[in-house]
Length: 259
Ligand SMILES: [Mg+2]
Image (cartoon, rainbow, N blue to C red):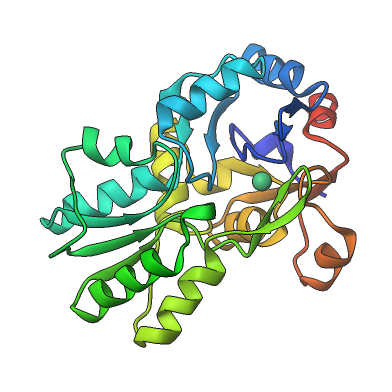
């Protein structure tokens, strides 16, 4: 049983926890309000790589969640920090949507040639044979692979769809090089949000629908892991994972009773 008494803050996944597709889950907004009233800190830690941070906040507003962009952590932010720290700043983006805006606003040079990094996110239809081959050649020319996330799949309303992981694995296999993971379950990524909240890992719990990326990732770095049975949750996968969540909830809405 989980020790909620030790918990001062929550890291919360977005997709599959707050909403699925365009449908917010009932009661989750009220749970966030209760956290706020009781003085719990919280940040949103998502492996979403299809939108810039501002666009994620806008989408959440559209779903009825009053969440500021600065409360949201996505892997592009971790990649930007990594690239800046390295002193190099040229990268090729294998991403989709407006996520390039995060990089450009941070002063990083996005280019198709002579790059230091190949940054791979969930490019969806952008994972074309051409773009993947372009990435292949840049990596063989010395660029390092930064994987924004390595999830195997995610849940769209019509069913599960391939995420970034399988495509990163393909380029790793082709080049013999290892990607560096920027998003969940990287402890550096969780730390970005924990530092902002000024709490230690043991004072925080991660709430997510992914037993590996969210729950196991959090537990590996000393946080508690709360699994919700919404979103991509599947009983058979959770059972065979070997991971024991600190708490399992039908929905994040049910956490309100435990606070
Ligand atoms: Mg999720």
